[in-house]
Length: 216
Image (cartoon, rainbow, N blue to C red; front, side, top):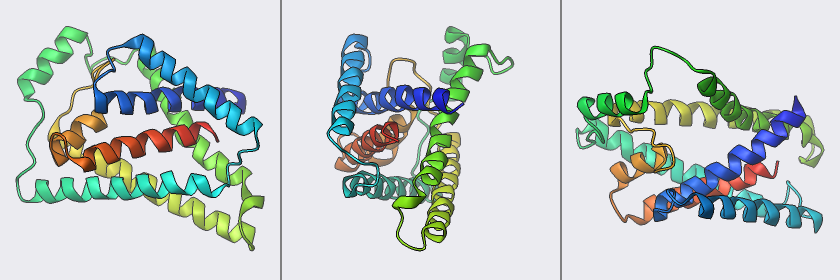
């Protein structure tokens, strides 16, 4: 199961990270460019590990804290606008209905592809739990206590982030566009506005944390 988990973690994390950057600069429709960038970052990660790059290095703390901070700003700004009625819908119900009809994405049936996609996405989440349990010796003394506290914090951040993004998505109604802009990018544009530096900060933070996740 770990071999499957590791393979899916690298594949899903790198491809999702490239999608985040592609959403910011509008090249997600160029498949060859996305594949080339994904292979480049996989190769860069391999070279870094062969030269002694460690998971517990301080360099990995920077993208982690940056992403958590940008996610907190995004959720805070989103709920602030939603509370005061300034957060509009990205798509109307008629547009969503037309999108599902054109792409045959009826919610009344669950295909094998949808199940496999959900499994691959879940493998990335599970790798975070596995990385902490395997990296207990890297923690400061007492190792077990610090590792358990880190695991609790990770679960709290994951739960808050998932519920927060899901709530905003329920209100904003983004569309899953295969090969196009990611859902988080659509929502960030709606919250921060077009060309806002905070939008690009969230996209780069998402990219960095996903590449770091592949290294686990």
